Length: 81
Figure 1 (tube, rainbow, N blue to C red):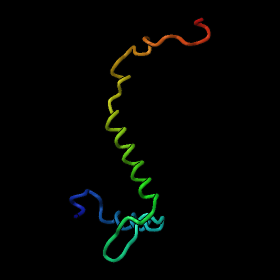
Figure 2 (cartoon, rainbow, N blue to C red):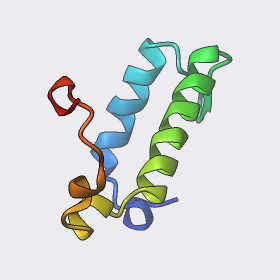
Figure 3 (cartoon, rainbow, N blue to C red):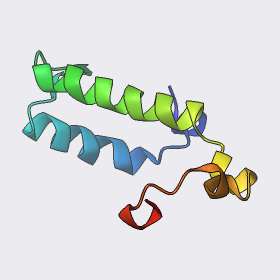
Figure 4 (spheres, rainbow, N blue to C red):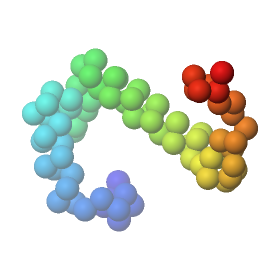
């Protein structure tokens, strides 16, 4: 895949992969890079996918679109008794 396809500058890929290799998250065997056999890779991927799913699912700000929503909730403060 070319840098033009990904919009990632060619100079960014190598240093990023080396940092990931230093962290033990990828391994390098010329000319290939692969995810390391490490539970942190799965955990990081799951966390990223979870955040992405939440952002996609709840991207609309319901509260901003429904002015006055807070008026519908009962006053549960001790002063309301």
